[in-house]
Length: 107
Image (cartoon, rainbow, N blue to C red; front, side):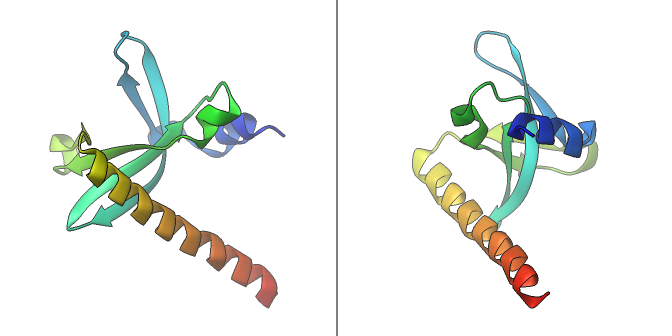
């Protein structure tokens, strides 16, 4: 089964964020994980319907500000901050992946 098919089957609409690109096109992003970095919350997304393998590997990161109805996703414009948040995401994701591997070894 292709990666794109898995994304469509495994995740519900509540995990999808729709954003508008610079050309006015709507892009659906699939929520992957939340990262807390330096006291701020960031959400990591992938394209919900990637057209290429390269697109499937890309991560979009937005800062999460507010709660409930006041919640907003803000674009992270500082490249250094973006790199730092992405590194933290990778560290957490690696820990998550290692945890899955450890569970398999214990079985």
